[in-house]
Image (cartoon, helix red, strand yellow):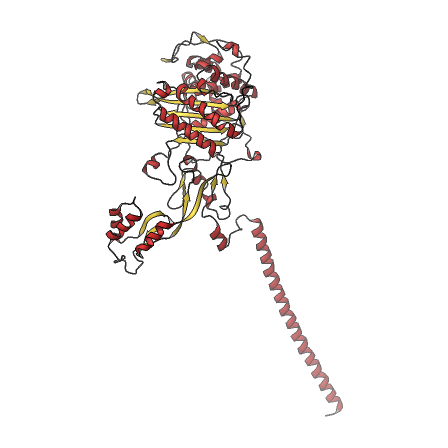
Length: 572
């Protein structure tokens, strides 16, 4: 082999080696590139996921540790943060026949002996029923709520079939107070009846349940309302009572009560029978409390311009029906006298001049033709006269007969009548200023101003005198309506209502107090009408809640009624 051949071979080998090295280097670079690409993709996915967690309200989920620290159900509070409903871990007593492996022989001792020991721990249980359950061999709950010390005593019995699982327990620290507002939670953990039902999904949401829900009510006001309604109900032997305190400018419910109540901590047969909410679900003919609404509609339409004009106060004969007053009030009355003396005849004649369509339109604007506007699930549908009101129906509706609504309907209507003329829906939620609904205008501001004067005059000179709390400038109207029954109205069964607002020089709150079938007793001077039983409830309630709500008594100010006072005998 010559030198040239050797040199060529060496050169060729070097080129081949360089090629191999270059190929290996390219492969390594490609692998690094793929690793970098994969890492970049993974990093991008991680960044996007983090971003998703940051912007999605459904993406922020608690870790298992955080989940364990969260309350099992969200808390409800009043507007001031007072706890109304709380959930906490608790024990239950469960019977597991398979705990020892042989379901045919689950107990060490006899069912009767075990039942006797359980009876010693839980005196309220039915011992025979428990023994029968243990003997049946069927598993299930023996008791849903077991205190820690009770759980320890159950464990001391030494029966493996008696298990004590940890469960969530709902507790209402205020007891029966505000029961119809709150509702309760059933054995399956579902909210029932009140705001527990309305907010069930929100209160169970892991994202939201750590944040208490503030309701609109003030428990100080709630307690005072329930107390005064209970006293009034007891004093008159009434079968039930209802009441509400409503903010006239926002629609927030400061208190709502339906008596008798139930205990949400312990739902028994008696409690289940008292769950019906008289404020939002029961419709009544609310009688003369409708007369101010009729007068407001007539003023707004221009039908009433001269408050000194006198209207025929004799009985009205129409279509074979006679409209008359409870007692003679003279041959004629003007508008202030009509409301002060609560005349059916002159109110009916004013409504007749107004016309059925305008009256009907006003009632619709006030929401009287639909279920009351509030979050609570139990909302009664009014007994509405229909699309065409004959002349007689228009007259009877004017003084609160022939139409049946809830006390909440009445409260919202009175709020619109005194707040400047704007109707707003009621709400159980605490509202911030920017959350207050705009509402809809029903009355002119000038009409509302006149109604504040007239309602105040009723409390000063008329049937509402027993509601006039010194210094609080209460105004309002009584209503005593016979309840309908088979063959007509029942003369011995009344619904007595007082619808009020205060202070009338700058109304802030509406108060409704209603008694269902009150009796004439010594406490009510043997009278059954609202002037003697419902009005005094308001007269006692307002001084209790006024200062709590920032309304202090002031005898140096009042709504100016100087232009109307001369129209009322004795009003000078």
